Image (cartoon, rainbow, N blue to C red; front, side, top):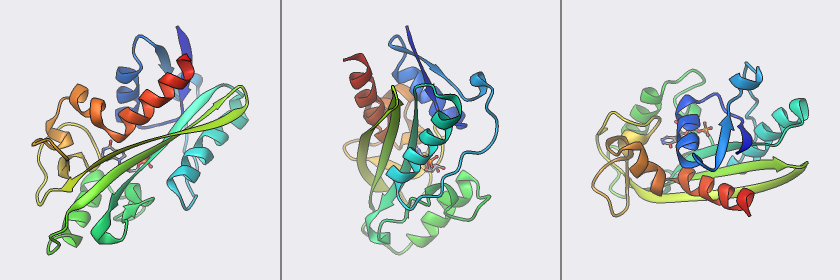
Length: 191
Ligand code: IMP
């Protein structure tokens, strides 16, 4: 089976990628190649951050790898939290802090439309490729569910009555932003 390195320190993302690519690829983590530390994420766009992360590791290890960057885009907030999704409530904010800030900012807002977008950047044989996945939905008024991570408890995908945090991993992965981007990545790598 082909091996591919996922440039992430997020155990939830790693688990999702392993589930989606299982049987097709062995997904290696940064820990497995001995990298510990932070990866810079200082670009003004989601695509820019995905590319920055993958280049950072490729330049050091010269091995095929991919990185993802995700943002939650809320239309009534002019696209916030967007590229700042991870640190919406501040540099050391927890998932809960970010989610609470979002709910607070939206407490009087009726238009709850939002989407998640993931950009995956891949470097293979020295060449850069990108793949995008998106899922549309609405922001709930209170958090629901214990599974998943990040903003999952307040994101209700269109056409479903469960938030991402109430779904099983399989259900979320089938329709999620990251699931869709990973399927495109797998299609490209297997072609
Ligand atoms: P990152 O920069 O790609 O790690 O993502 C930024 C932030 O978006 C994360 O810290 C999470 O708060 C949020 N996020 C990313 N992916 C998901 C997801 O699948 N569900 C919910 N929140 C997510």
